[in-house]
Length: 64
Image 1 (tube, helix red, strand yellow):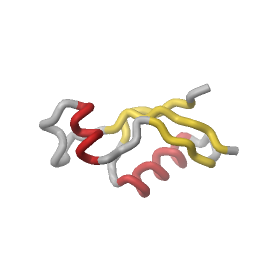
Image 2 (cartoon, helix red, strand yellow; image 1 turned 30 degrees about the vertical axis):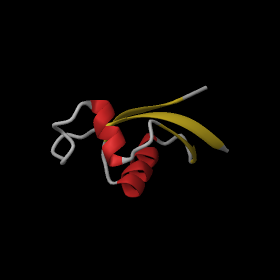
Image 3 (cartoon, rainbow, N blue to C red; image 1 turned 120 degrees about the vertical axis):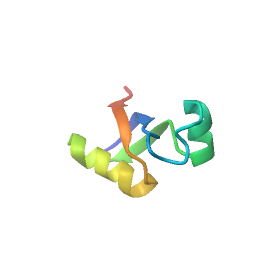
C-alpha cells in the first residue's frame, strides 16, 4: 500500500547548508512530500530516502 509522507531533509555538511531551507530543497531538487510503497519500519523509510535521494533526513511522518 502506498502512503504519503512529509520529509524534513538535513543539509548539514553538504553544499546546501549555507542556504535557507526552502532554497536548499529547490536547489537540491528534493521533494517535501512523497508517496512510497514501504513498510512502517522507520529505518527502512530512512534508508529508502537516503539511497534514492542521497541526503539524510531530520524527520519524516505519514500524512493522513
